[in-house]
Length: 216
Ligand code: SAH
Image 1 (cartoon, rainbow, N blue to C red):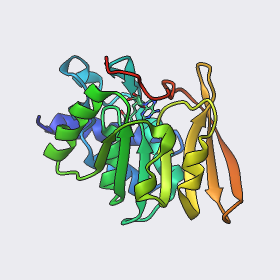
Image 2 (tube, protein in one colour; image 1 turned 90 degrees about the vertical axis):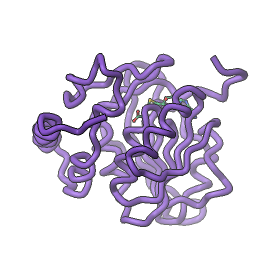
Image 3 (cartoon, helix red, strand yellow; image 1 turned 135 degrees about the horizontal axis):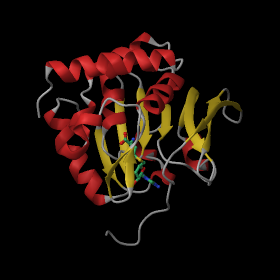
Image 4 (cartoon, rainbow, N blue to C red; image 1 turned 180 degrees about the vertical axis):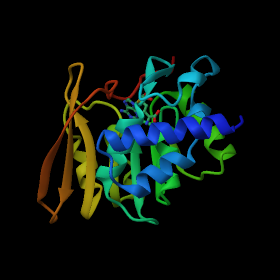
């Protein structure tokens, strides 16, 4: 695992592309600059790692597009030291970007093999998220409340448990919809019972699935 000069150059170009696509948060762009995305892809895709594309990561899942990662991270609007819960660890790339932002990161993955792969990779990169194998629909009540929750798979609806685990003032960033594309929403908790919902355009995600009866 080497982060070479050419990778750094490709990353800079990708960041210019993210700026052109409307990402303005400099903290997010810096975090993306610090995380070698090619570490999260199999060697067959390494040369494409800095293109704004999703790639297969095994078990029918994909690493999100850099623009999607940047957009969701930007929408969280958190500060260093705050607590964030991610649903769908997948390759671990989005998780690494959240760690690079300085957040206290918790992440849940329902596919055992992806969970097993992401854990040593993130540790080897010096990141220290709390990773869990389980069903993200339930969130992680023992570590709640969270300042932010980010769902990185397309949810058929907004899971009630996740809303309950937000701090007042906290935000859920979630793509909702069951077709080929999902609509990105933020739900900001303004009081114990009230949430402000905003829409942020269409994105494409693999589906959020209920817990598995058994591993494949
Ligand atoms: N954040 C990831 C994106 C991976 S794709 C990355 O940067 O690579 C979405 C992931 O969500 C997949 O790995 C999928 O297995 C996982 N997922 C789907 N439904 C889930 C659920 N109910 N709980 C937890 N993870 C889930």
